[in-house]
Structure formats: structure tokens, C-alpha cells
Image (cartoon, rainbow, N blue to C red; front, side, top):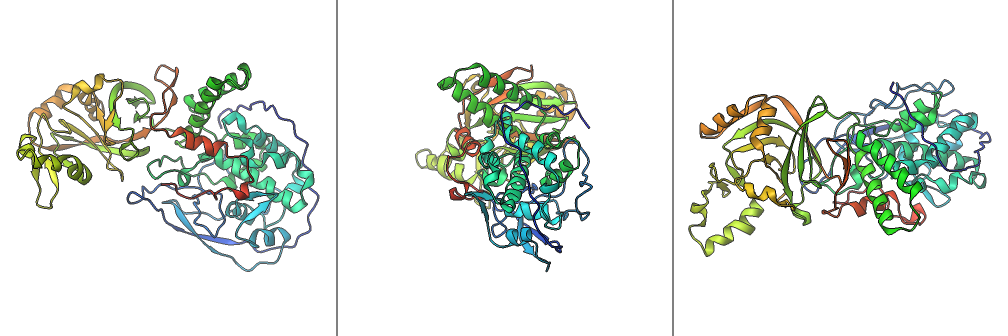
Length: 518
């Protein structure tokens, strides 16, 4: 297990006391899941997702059991020995719940009694609590684990170190648990720990709460099992903190966050804006795999740059042209796999571009299609034939994805000298495509040029598939290790920040989380 660094939290909190709750043995609930993922664009990408903060009467996003960052799964010795239910990996699931008959416990009845749980005006995650307590026979656990509870409370109250508002995890109530009933206290504390673990593992704004063109998500983590592992470890807080990313950008952003908070007067507008940028981009880091592929193509639409990594080191950088600022033509955020290169590709023109931009020009210019080497296909589609002046240039990097976005060459090389390179319909035009192709094919550039010169359309498979990440990061560490900031040209930052610092109103009165936004 790697080294775990603990961070000092500048909070004071009274310790939580848990009187014993009366209970009876109870048969565990059994939960089955039907996998399903909706999208406003097209078919599912097939990413496995985790839990949303909604009741089981709503469509939950549940996760497959995955590796717990920082250690091996282990249930606390004092816990019931029954393991949590194993979930099947795959697309976003839709929950279908079948409850086995069981004896009554006060805790179990409370969890099963309503579609949603609310404690002192704050909504709890019924599905996640049910999953967690099913592994404990629906018995209270914190009454005999005071030290572990205190350690985890300290971690939750230090959520600001990760750019997360502690209030997302019931911080105000955690500071005054003496006002709660024993049962409410038990449920609230568990929900705080589970929700914080979930936010570190996959973000406070996970994939199901985003628009349908922002679909990056990390490996699935079973946060109920993660909490069990933390309870059984010598340092519960460190086990939960280990769910957060450890990328150079995440570490650098956390360091800068601390400097801005400690060294700048409150109320300074420029500082406030910079803090928001940092917090938003910490969240974006939580959407990424914890272990990035050592060989990968990385496109940052906010920076209009492409970086190719080999052995986890940047070996090639080039400018790119990305999607326009208007929402429908922005480049999406996603992961795909590049498996081949098409030499001298034709361009099968998307229907909306054909009908809205190209075909109207033929009414005033009957020779427009012929002059641009375009033909109508038997199926009614419009295609531009291969050639040096074709829209896709002489190289297309093939990477299947539901957005129809890919990397390609372009004959308009002069456009790369522009400061504003957001002029495509979402696809990524590459300034130095032959150099990139040579790296991907592991061949000399002359070999790539010879394949183009042969004429005709032909495809070559890559020696091995290469992951491609199209991201939108307005704060990031560049290939030299320098922290960089970029303008939020797509205006995506404010919505993320609102999820990190929600309006100061009771959680139960807010829009229920877990609903797709696009």
C-alpha cells in the first residue's frame, strides 16, 4: 500500500457519543439490480457508475464491487460476518429491490419505512445506507466504535481541503449531534461517512448528475465496502482519504488551494474566483481513473492542445482545433479507444451540417458540390471524396464513441496559428497528424507519408489500442510540471461549483440529486 498523507484540518468539533440502541436479530435485505443507462444522445457508453443520493424508489446509479484505493477489503472484526451483496459491472444500473422477510430491528424499520430518509431537514441516501447496513444485520455499529467515528468525523469536517463543502456531508449536524435522537445520530453519521467516501471516489457531481456530453468517470468503487475496510483499519480517516486522486494536478491544486486560503484576505474578488477555479478542477480530477493508462492521447479542449504520453511521460505535444463555444458544437468530455488510422479518408458529412450549412448553398451555386468534391450517396447522405483538400485532410484517427467525435487532419493549416481555435463542430483537428500517426503506429514519419502518397483510402490497425481522453480542464499541470489556468470558454465551471457549494437551504428542500441534466 502506498504512503498515505494526512492533512491537518482547521476544525473543532465535540466528540460524538452513541448510546446503545435496542435491537433484535434481522435477516438481511437482498438487493438486485437491472442495468440500464439512459442518454439524450445515443446508446450507452457502458461505464459502470456508482450510487446517487436518492431513494430506492428512484432509478439509482449503483456500482460494481471494485478495488478499494489504498488497501484490501476487510470487514471489522466486530462486524457481522455477512459480506455485502456483489454487484455486476456494466452500464448504469436501474435498481429493482426485493426485500427478504426479516425480523424487526429499529434501524431496519427506519430504513425500510419510507422512500426517503430525512434527519433534521437533511436528506440521506437510503440506497447506500441499506447497502451498508445489510452487511451488519441492520444493527447500529457506532455505539461500539467511538474512536473510529471520531476519526471519520474529523475527515469529513476537513473536506474543504479537497475543495468540497463539509456541509455536503451534514457538517453542521455533526457538530451538534447531541441534539439528535440515538437512531437519527447513527443514520446521519453513517450517511456522512458514506457520502464523503463517494465524493472522493467519483466526485460530488458524478456522471448521473452531469449533462450527457460529460461522461468521464473513474473505476467503480464500493463505498459501503470501503467504509467497512476503514472501520477495521488502524487509521479509518486515512483509508477514506485514500479514495481521492493522487495525480500531479490534484496534488498541485490542493497545495495552491491551501496557499490561497491562508495567504489572501477574505473578500478579494480575484482570489474568490481563483479559489472557485481550483475547487472545480479538483472535482474534475475525481472523474478520472485513479491509474491513468501509461500510454494515452490526452486532449484538453480548454487548452486546445493534445499531449501523447508513453510510459506515463509526455513525449509529443501539438495544437488542436476543438468545438465551438455554442453548446451544440462543444467538444464533449469522454474516454474512447483508438484502434486504427484511416489514410486518405472520405468525409461522411453529418446530416445536420449537410442540411443546415452545405445544401442551402447549392440553391445559389449549383456547382458547389462538384467544386468541393462532394457527392450524394444512394442512401441520401452527403460525402466528400478523399483528396488533399478534403475536410478530414489525409488522416483520420478512428476511435468509436457515441458522440461521433474523432481526431483528424485538415487542409486548413493556417487556422492553428489562431489564439481562438474553437471553430469545429466538436471533432478534434490535429496540427501535426503525421507525427502523431508515426508515434501511434511506431513507424517513421516517412512511412506514414508513403502510405498517404499511395492514394486511395486504406486503414491500418494500431499495434495496440490506445486510450484517448478528451477533457475540459481550466486548471491543470502542464508537461513541464507548471500549474496552468485557462478561461472557462464553454461556461461549464459554474454548474460544477454549485454542486460543490449548494445554496444554503435544507437538503430536503433541494432538487433531489441523481437526475440526469442533459
